[in-house]
Image (cartoon, rainbow, N blue to C red; front, side, top):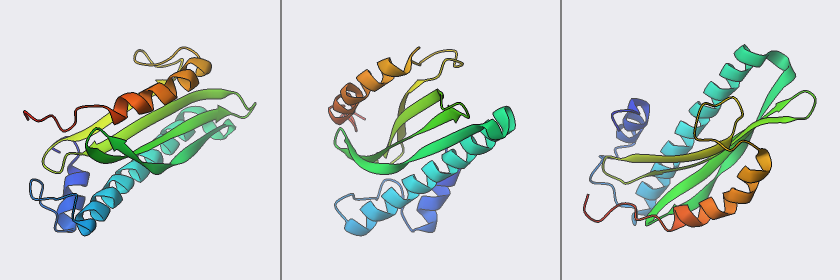
Length: 149
């Protein structure tokens, strides 16, 4: 949480105290999902502003609305965006999963196709698209939150 103070503040504004949040409580669940959606919306705005400043109007960013996803034993969201040149060529695509353990850890798992990135990315779009269903399976089977934490 210390790396995402806006998210932490959003929780506290909703009277959600990390460590006392119970996902079985429908109000807590919905408030956490809304806080995660707000974090994603802020991320999207940052990406749009960055790409506009970097590439100008001949580059567009299309965002994927967040969708509920199970991440181990935690509810979370899957989201992403695609950057496209005005020629229609996909310049980058990111797929991310986000979840909060209800106490102190906010998990974000990301993969991408981004030829300009220095590491952690696929070198071609087809490879990312092939991997995406496997990533969904991996994320669903993660041991989160870990029993020993």
